[in-house]
Image (cartoon, rainbow, N blue to C red; front, side):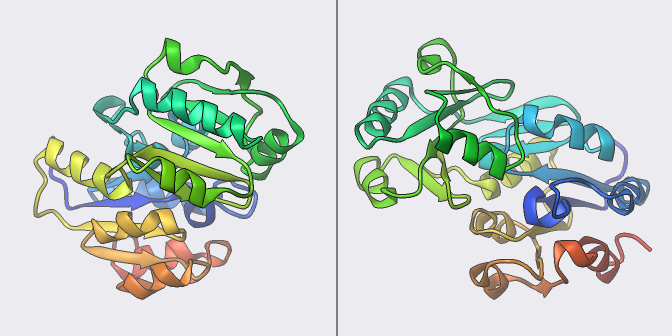
Length: 258
């Protein structure tokens, strides 16, 4: 590996992406300049690899922490994969059905849902993602890294009944579900350890509650201007909103681009 001067970890929605969940030409150019300056950019997201493939290709970022830290790639090669046991996935499926909700099943390359309903369609429209195929039994066929509870209530029921899982409500219609102890920060630590880059400066950029662990795992904690108050409280720097050049402003603040 050539000399590395830093690693920069970017959340996507509300952070690296604009209001249309897209990347601007300015962001693409900044990611290229980062790499020229020997800073490794890493996407750190709740999305799957499939959902970020186009963004990865357009930005040239081929190192990923996906599904809230459950899966880590460096330059396209797997570094870490955290799984949810099959019996827990099955219990979660039956719990969602008992509560009149649906569930999504996530692997790095495949997403399925238990059923197509208006709420399922609303959920995937909200996050600008294609509607997954229906397969309510994927947990019997594949190892799963993440689940998605699709619904607007009953958060406390899930947390009480599944202490072995961690729940991140990522929006009004759904909850990301991963193994206990899993988070974006764990993904950061797994990547740094695998690369032997302990001591190299790390920079975390985020806006949501599932970015708290991401920022805590980094030396420099950058909260977007549109970030949740809890994230701003732990930030070492608060930049402007993602729609107001916040990423570029922060990268220049730390002299990562010029």
